[in-house]
Length: 552
Image (cartoon, rainbow, N blue to C red; front, side):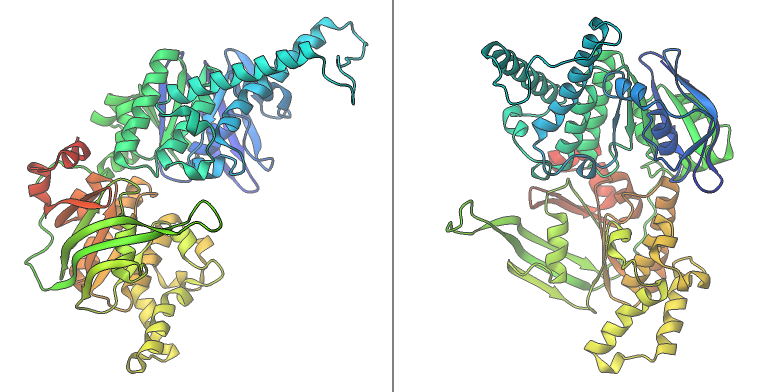
């Protein structure tokens, strides 16, 4: 189906993809794994003709069914790619919220794939029936009314396109497709948006689908549904799939073969189970060993139960729900119901559940950021701090790392003059915290854009810990990181917990990550806490059916 031969790609500097060669057979699912920056996405985007204009293909060729799509040294044939993209090869992007047009309804966006290719096919057919040198003229001149027969054909064609779109939306597991057709992307959940992207990709039954990290930010249950959906499409349509991921567990479940990429090169290739059971390369062994799992004896992190740092009693949290009309009454919507738990000194309490279940809303209420509450939140330590999911958007891009680390100390001094520090003292504290989170002093004067994702997350953790709070709430701190970086951040959190005695409320949708890091686990669904207990007890003897489903 696809043959990539000796492909090398460079931007302004050195090559980021180096002499990459692989093939994808008819109906095969090929996985590409590796850390961020290894060249996975650039390889796929080059193959699809979607890489930026600043990229240079310095060597290599790309074939689709033995037809040459791209060759080094020759300009990209955009007309050829327009014919292929959508009809013969399509792509599912990592973040559907930024890939879908926010101003267009879902149905129209999926329908656009049909209408564009329909117009291209008709144009080709017209050109093939017009003698050479003749001008192609429309049947209807500008300003003229469309004849009744034409209008009828237009309506019939439009209705047929809508029916195809509804069938495509239904085929990817969406319910009430007539309603979904009329919604905008922001009105859908993350899993529903990803299903819409897949519907756009499969509606013309292309021979090849490229899925670039399609499940990264999804909950474990939704992730499972998307993987099963991709399997089903592959079996029913017999198309080929290139599946890019940094989640090796997903690659193992879905793929027939796997390519391992590092620094722009393919370092290992083989049948999936052979790669996992007998990895030949050191880098592959490192990736596999970093995958969080539930094998082996669980190490007890907390030595003994300390005092309660925060007590939550019968807590319900509300949001205002705007009325549909200007003079309509605004109502309150309950998002968290009757939460009741404590976080103890020196422990890591894991909070797990799907998106929309109320995890982040609950954490904001504990921090005092949600004021519409009933019940009680009682703190017995310094003001708790928070580590956010995406450090790139939570760190001020215009400030240096040193400034960012000193800012909590300045704020603390402003609130309590007895804790105020001189500039030299706060600088020394910031440098000490840099070392604690595993970074050198040279990063003090750098800005967030000059750091990797893992380094940015270390700075976020340092910011949260520098005022020595008793409790830190970590909201999905490793969900967007590669498995090796993820393992480093989890190890850092465990080490800092032991060194500083800090307690963590650790929020995640990854049940294996929760197992690795937590002393106790709290399971949440639809705003309610269903189960809470010691990690091993919950994993070995889950009481609630939903907990059993998460573990499965």
